[in-house]
Length: 85
Image (cartoon, rainbow, N blue to C red; front, side, top):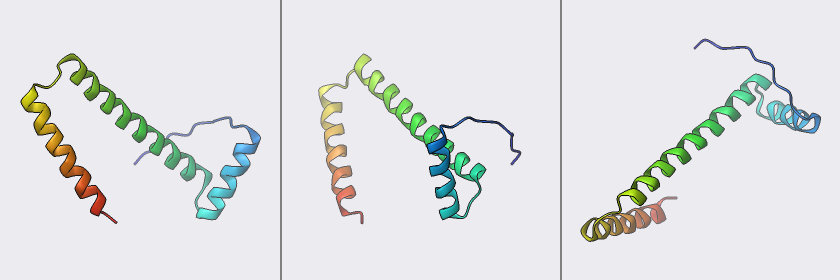
């Protein structure tokens, strides 16, 4: 995958903390920054998707029947999640 060089500015204490983490993980600063940005972007995108879904439900709330089905699905997911290690 092609890479793009970029310059960033960090507060000095954060830079030193990042250096320590990169050293501990035995990866380069570039790899650390790429991993951090990737994680941040993934979280942002998940939140944006969740916000869009919630907005769709606000604009077109589920019918009583749909709400009952969703409640059953939610309960089933909760039970499955509780079994995961």
